Image (cartoon, rainbow, N blue to C red; front, top):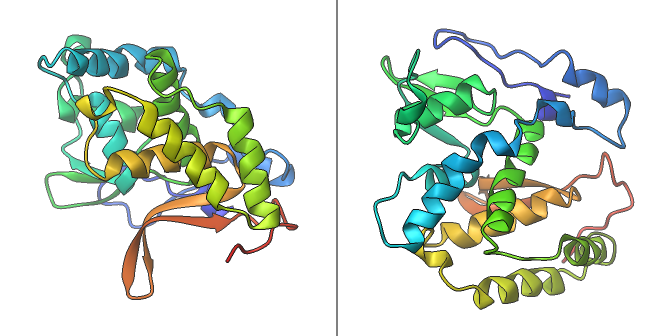
Amino acid sequence: MREWYDGYRFARQAETSVYNTAMVLYFLTPDELIDHNVRIDYGTLRHLLVVNRQAAARQADINGNFDMLRDIIADGRAKTRISISFPLQRLADRKNFLSLLYYFGLLSIHGSDHVRSDLAIPNQTVRHLMYGYPRDAWDDARLFPANMDDLIALMNDMAYAGTWRPAFDYLSTVLAQQTGICDYMFGEKVVQVVLATHFGLTEYFLVRSEYELNKGYADLYLEPDLARFPGMIMAT
């Protein structure tokens, strides 16, 4: 329950986090741990994300919202001073966009440095829902047409037979075939976010970014969700 429904703080001086009391009821239905009603409709964010991609494709000035969402998914957190109010036409501003995600409940306060708030994805439910936004934007822009049915079949084999390479090869091939993707996302995070987004949407694994492991940090760590899929094996 802590993994999926805890993690909300609404004041910088708060010392403990709270649960979403409506979502905890989903703990009683393990086949569906996520309350999809808490997901902000993609149409609400569409303009903020896709305009960024289209501008980048024209090599014009970009507002950076898609890139910020990418970084949040990769890193799990961002620092900003939360805006109390702001006009809709100023949502291209980094502080305003992050504040909007906070008011939507997609980010929550996890600390502060006296002025700025350390915002983080509160739990696995929200992280899973956030994976859908880049995927929707890629679909909307016809940029990354990976077939989710094919990927789910490959992930099923990965989870239950330990054959992990075909799933990674599939996404690697699709990514390599795309043109223009590096116009708006570049560096290793493009690979990290593409893998996290698509593997996270298949539900077999808890996807963790920058996970502390073996006295270092893994860019991406897939933890088998054995609570929901007890028949999974540990791939070697």
